[in-house]
View (cartoon, rainbow, N blue to C red):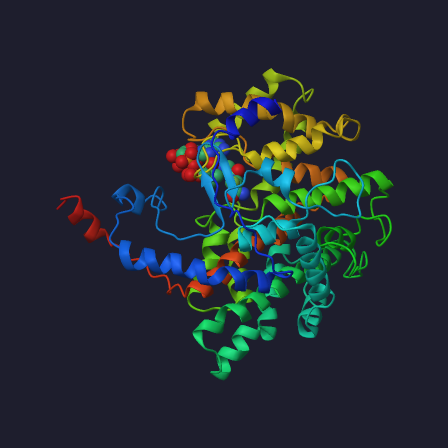
Length: 481
Ligand code: FAM
């Protein structure tokens, strides 16, 4: 299964990472090394090639969610319909091979650190072990405390408020601490300095996510009482896991996980948050962040808006829909290996005009390599997952559903997307509050849009303002009376 999916996802190689890596020990100094040449590049394109045509916009695209309309500049990731996501030109497999992991950990199955991925997104370079460790420490130091008002606000939110609403509120409230907003308000900021304060805010935002997600989860499951401790000497994903009560040492170990299971959970968190960071710019959460940021909204307001977009069922909330769907299907079929019953179940769903959650994609036309990576995580731990009938159904479904969707004939991409596998793995370890899954997605997704916002400020990109067309304009274009 894996090799079949792999062969579909590793056809071309791009080389956008640079030969000479930036030597700065921290992100700010590394960026300072890169900025002059990158700005020069864009300036040259703008000056000499602004008239080059990118494509034609059709009426179908105007009324069809702007599909196929390439009109956004996005720095660090690109999505090929056939092979999936590349992070600064690197596939998931390449990132898994090259990006530094936690040097303290000796587990052969350990995942790379999302902090390494953040470095790659921001700079285009694979960080050295020291650079990755420095960024890990910097985020842990910035994330040790969150602003007092945000803390108070989070403690007083209704316990049954939607977790994504809680996250959006928490992030928006941090705008009070925005260095960018403060300096801008004081009128003390020159355009060339925008990026430095944006970087500061962006790093504070990403660093605060373990504490914010921990607060939200404790609001949901523990009446707001903390489930674990924040460790300044540990990495971002470890702290997320601890604050969810999912480590054996620094948390209440809410699910009584063994040492090995807790370790695996932290690695699941690293893998999941490491590969969900970005999916180029047009998806709802990234695009929203970029759009709001283009009006010079600070990173907190911009990403809070992105989070609201991520909460839609056709976007980030799909992971929860998949878990519900797998559990419901399992309760209605006699065995998770009964191909006939699974097929019948899918047809019933499609005939009632519902979508098969976790399948399809607006851009991708092959199995999502992020799905493959999550599937591999389960396949590398057969003893852990062999008795989990939901995980088994997820695996079997990924072979049956594409065939059914092909016969159905509507879906442009009948293959599994990442949400097919992610939620059910978290569910397996005991994170079973489904509305919460998207919060974990939101932790990860911060990294791509925040990277772009920093580069938006470096390049001085303008406010976004596409032209819209009314019905009369469409009719006139189509020569209709
Ligand atoms: N099951 C049944 N029908 C589907 C389908 C699915 N999984 N995916 C697409 N279709 C239908 C779609 O509803 C549309 O039907 P109508 O013409 O009647 O409106 C038709 O196939 C063509 O759609 P498309 O061009 O293939 O897809 P879109 O670009 O319009 O939409 C998705 C893309 C992801 C919204 C869509 O495939 C979907 O609803 N999938 C299920 C929900 C899901 O898994 N979302 C997660 C996406 C994930 F990548 C993420 O953002 N987290």
